[in-house]
Image (cartoon, rainbow, N blue to C red; front, side):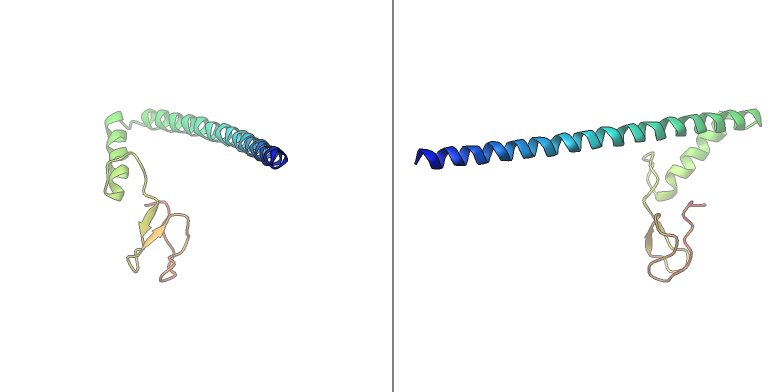
Length: 115
């Protein structure tokens, strides 16, 4: 009976080692993904600052920029600081994800920029 218990414990410890290795691998992957996202955010921040400064140099006021931001935010019907992940097809009215270039239902080209 003791041999069976020892074998069972060895199995459990082996399983814990496998789980630990898998979690370590996932953690490293998440850290790498986080660094990529941080770099993208930094790039977007610089692009946004450059765009705002150029607009202000051209005479666009901060109030006008804020009004445009609010207008764009409300395009999906919610003032939540987010852009909807879906849009409506201008031809058939079905909701289409913004990842698609054409409507799944009618095949017409979808305006992914929301313009």
